[in-house]
Length: 210
Image 1 (cartoon, rainbow, N blue to C red):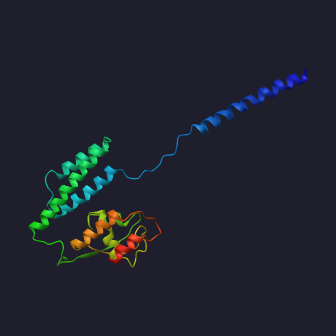
Image 2 (cartoon, one colour; image 1 turned 30 degrees about the vertical axis):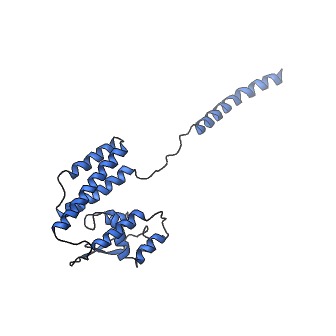
Image 3 (cartoon, rainbow, N blue to C red; image 1 turned 120 degrees about the vertical axis):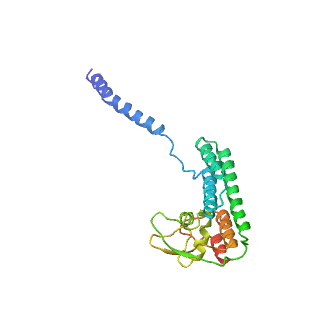
């Protein structure tokens, strides 16, 4: 009889333990999956490209009247989750801005295949959070992040890895590069391939050698 009472007492004591352990196990199993960073969307990249081209056309005073309306349409479509339509609208805005820039050079009688007679340069001090991409996208430099290889090439003696720069570094930036140099830089930025921080990629070395 005493053994029976002890068994009943033990069951009462252990029941809450098993209950809470089961709850904890269930909570662990039902934990939501960790969020995976998929990087920038196609529409955000297309919109950034369009903005860079628009800024370039603006700096020349040759932006067409409805180009910014097309960009706003792309941003609205992106906010609604309509990725394909947003990319299409952003690409149309970028193309129109690029045509405006070409129109400027034609009307000014400037051959972009030749170096500019007037060259200007500036010194830029790297601050926390900077990258070559971000520096090239600033209005005072190129207003186009895809032109970052220009900065990399002109400061290759200071930059060992294009993906790793440090606050306090001083870069010399040619703000009026030749057209062919600009085209080569943009092409490299868009076709560079995979990269890793702390490693000097072969594609970057090939670009510097040109």
